[in-house]
Amino acid sequence: MRMVDLIQKKRDGHELSTEEICFVVDGYTKDQIPDYQVSAFAMAVFFQDMTERERADLTMAMVHSGDTIDLSAIEGVKVDKHSTGGVGDTTTLVLAPLVASLDIPVAKMSGRGLGHTGGTTDKLEAIPGFHVELTSEDFVGLVNKNKLAVVGQSGNLTPADKKLYALRDVTATVESIPLIASSIMSKKIAAGSDAIVLDVKTGAGAFMKTVEDAEELARAMVGIGNRVGRKTMAVISDMSQPLGFAIGNALEVKEAIETLQGKGPKDLEELCLALGRQMVYLAGKAESLDEAEELLKEAIRSGKALEKFKVFVASQGGDPSIVDHPEKLPQAAYQIEVNADADGFVASITADEIGRAAMLLGAGRATKDSLIDLAVGIMLNRKVGDAVQAGEPLATIHSNSEDVADVVELIRANIQIRDHAEAPVLVYAEITE
Image 1 (cartoon, one colour):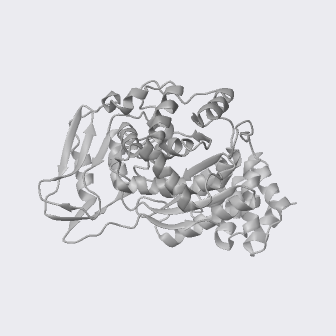
Image 2 (image 1 turned 90 degrees about the vertical axis):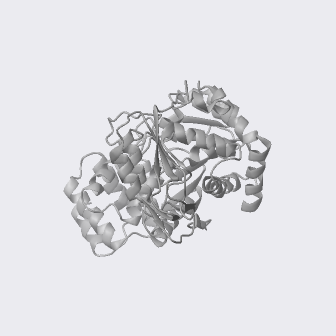
Image 3 (image 1 turned 180 degrees about the vertical axis):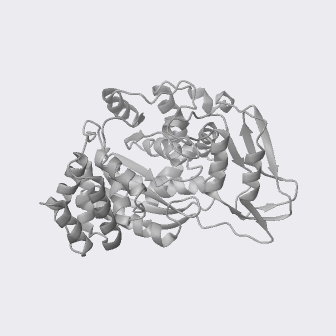
């Protein structure tokens, strides 16, 4: 088999066999096929697409290129959630204890964040004493005991995806649906869960800017998951403005606690219920999505979900008293308000630019080696559609430096006030098959 023949075959719009796809992935992982040939292959896929079977084969070839996580020692149906990324995306901090409180195992592996705020593990480390370094035995043991644990990513998962992702980034092939879908799904499948729920974002703060593109990606990933034996569903959700009010690690932990108490932002609660009901249904704990949603609402009302969060925090070395005393979370030295300069309604809050403002404060990483300040961030005081009067706060900057003129300017430029505005739709669609 020759790589040049496979490039030509895909370039001409023909379907590759399972064996041919494995040849490409295996050869590239072992450095037997050069970057320039895989670049040509990626461009051929970009223009000619792949069939559902090819997409599933590419995904599984990348899964088998490295380690896979065996969660078989964990009792029950393991359900994982993946978000394609956003600003103020605190859903995992709410969803994990909420779903686990219904006796569903949530074995979560999470990486560090690169961008406007930290990843889930960074956010959890804002809790005094909390640690994500667990042995495999401790991880499995905690999930079996408490139905919930979060561990930092380790091992050599999907090395083929890491190589291909880096190459796509410099060859203008990032936007290819089969390449995006197989990249995301290979990591989720290698992580060992039985069922997967996907939160596919759309809007200014998302990779997929239109609902149509987001739906195409969601259907591709759901198709891959179900084809390879992982029950998979997806939600298409809005990221034209930040989710919730908090952007920043400790600030997001506090907001997650408030949501588990039933006092959180309505959009964050709505999205957690939309994703959570799919997780509960796929785990076999409800006969319908609507029944699953009612179970989740009751877990919040009864305090079960909040109690599960406390147990989770304590079992990984954290201080559960932060639930009742959020002032124990890291606090920034300065709070600086950014006020509206006119009466009207908030017409837009550009999510990715507000995220960039939080990163400038130190809430996120500009590079892999950047240090995160867990205390800093931005609290929005208004969302799109809300009325505001001149002089009222649009946002509050939490900073450890008094000099935040550049952040103030960035926030002002990206919160638009008009004579009329309506709140955007949050959940556009559910992909359930």
